[in-house]
Image (spheres, one colour):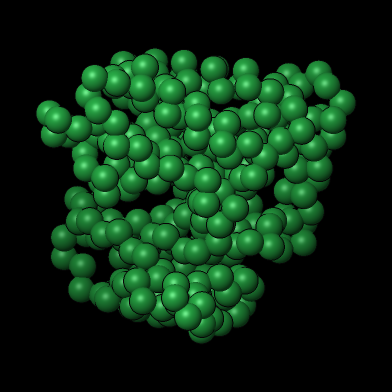
Length: 291
């Protein structure tokens, strides 16, 4: 039987893998960007990024000093009896000390830092019940440099798809080199203001090489990605052919009188990881199976 301690230990290992090693799809996108780049300066920037990734893996240390705040998405089996949320919180505390993670979580008004990345609603945990027998925990470690560039737009229905495109374009132009491009974009369309922002962040969980199952949404993903990579912002904002490594959209039905659009910006260090805790205690890391 899985215990809270099992969850805690799994979360520590999950966070260690997540902040040290990028998922294969992100590394592949960075490699592809380097292969098509023709200008010297962006090629140098991409080489520095790839060298940084290799050094992090070699030294088993976080690839960026901003190890972010921890946002979890958990799926529980219907008969789950273990307190998974407590295990996650304890795991974040332990990982902050052992990995280590920089203590980034502070009280928003006083800015008091508890030093362990744990506080009111942090780590933030999204929970649902599934039909699998294992506990699945996905984490996104989100740094502030990219998060601060995220935007919500409450468009009118009359602005339609052209308005969505314009909003995404203006968000990326405004971000420029601030989020350490080449960036990854999660876009939410529809719902309400809060639902839309949540969709945008959830879109970042999908692998960069997987298009949306809705063909119309998939076509918009491809069109936006191609257009944004013509902006010449490039790696670290110094110009180049790749400004955006990947772009995913998630949507929800919305009120007939509204058209919410959200863009959640992620840096090249698109750190996300998943662990599955099976009933016998066995751990599986599908996002980091290569090591």
